[in-house]
Image (cartoon, rainbow, N blue to C red; front, top):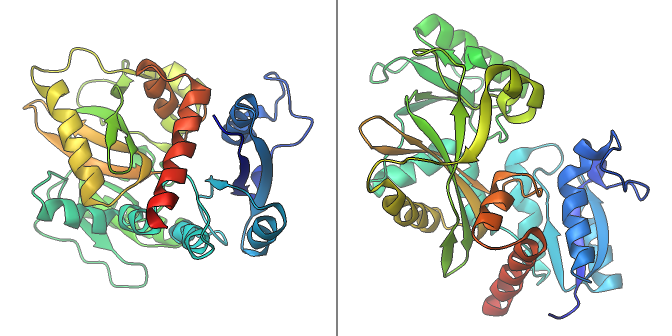
Length: 340
């Protein structure tokens, strides 16, 4: 394995402090992903330089010209505070002829817009929940073809931002109120989609031309009363104590219905290719009681800290964490070679 110069691109607020070395450090959770990846790269004997990025591309250009990295490990999730602009940074790397990890600009753009991705998948006869978009600044108008209950969320934000128990709406007034809140608090468009009752499955797909699908993870709700919605809210995703209190946990999927385990890899590879993803992604599915699988979201460049679903699925597939990170590096390098 060749020693590489790796430029880690992170948000300016997420550059890991040099004195952050202990798992007991209270700052660790804030920098968990960046710390884990940097540690893995160093363990792999690569040289690492962390570059903080907010609204200026000059630090990237300067590092490329002065240090001549072999590849950029891209952990940027927004640009100038706008999540929808994350593909700008990757487009710049493309223009600079720089190899990078993760998804290409086109895949990022297609997957980021939840409505656009659903339209593309529907065209290719992939099941998605019925949905409607409510643009900010336009008069509210509820679609008659949608059926309650629905889930209301941001059209472009990721990481369950803006999703709470109140996102589950059962009538037009609740829908209007939640749409207004998304417009006001998050400053962007809202999407309402039909609530699909069933099991929530997370599938990690890794690759460019040849794709690997890792073992399926599941979000399990043990203490939620029957009839109440089961959703990956912001608190479910980010609050460990909340999950403990309500018996919510992430685990490997067990006792899937006959044939489902065989269908999932084929479906996920198809989704990955329809949305022109590359590098690595996590696909969020809902499996209803009739065995029908709906695509909730496609997430290019998902979280890959060593305790998150993607890394745990990779480990289950036989890749320990450093080798999973090396696999992502290799995919970025091979994509650049093909482009050249």
